[in-house]
Image (cartoon, rainbow, N blue to C red):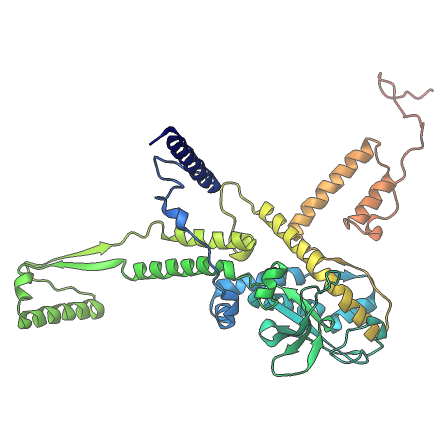
Length: 452
């Protein structure tokens, strides 16, 4: 082998080393040669996430909702909390119109089925707005234009026709038309107001037949583990007390069929006497004892599962489980604040764009002017909380007025704005001494003496 061949082999070996090092670096992650962490011997490196296609199992989703109380709470609590207080409309006509069509109940039902199946919709059945397969023009609507508002879940809603390929359209990537199961009539997408469960990217929506995912999908294994733990605990409770009887020569008795039958008959009679007469009869050479299974920690495991489920859904345990908060000095107030922020975000980002369309339709139906509204407090204060808050507000205002920072008129306006007192309760503003008025003082040497 000459020098050129050696150089060639050395170069080849160096190239192989570089390629091997490069291939190793491509697998980014934490590794430990001693413990095998991240290496070929690490069992966790073979973990993979695979598609369960659970959203296609519509029968399984509705069965969970009907049979499992946890699944029911996951799907119903959030829609209920976002709609139970609903909104404050600025006119009496608007309030009556909103109540006439039960808009809160309509949104509650639509969002509930969206969380169960992944998608639902409100079908707008309107008169004088053209055919159902044509786009909806709100400007054409007239008085008494509403036939009905109907909530349709995903199992009855089928995409039909071409897919909107205009990236500037609000319905980009969605079907132009839909059909209701059992009917061949096409419905334009603008005549449906869609509600979504877990939103997906557009490409995944296409693979999902243009539907979003059910909120139950990530919870299925966790819920199943909880029920497994509960059932295992139930079996432990049944077998918590076990009778143990020691008999001399038991092995010899069981060596033939007659002895086996005699032993079974003996203990069957013993259990009957214990059940009926609460008496156990034993031979002089028999010993009776009770074996108890320790159930310590079973309750903690079950409760931990429930708390993890509540955290995964984003609902505080105080609301999801109707239980007091756990932990030292825990009040659950911070969890409730975070939950209220979540509900307010749903109202603003999910409900308001849909209400903009529905409100315009209802206003045209009754022939009334456009209205404005504000969302009511989702969890109103209790009487005790409001009283304590009002006391703190009054004490702060008294201190500010006494220090001359606020006037009495300004303090009254604040009390009225915060609904602490009404104007009738407060009466007229108390009048203080005029500016620069001298204070009356008395001599320090005693009371005044009258002159004779």
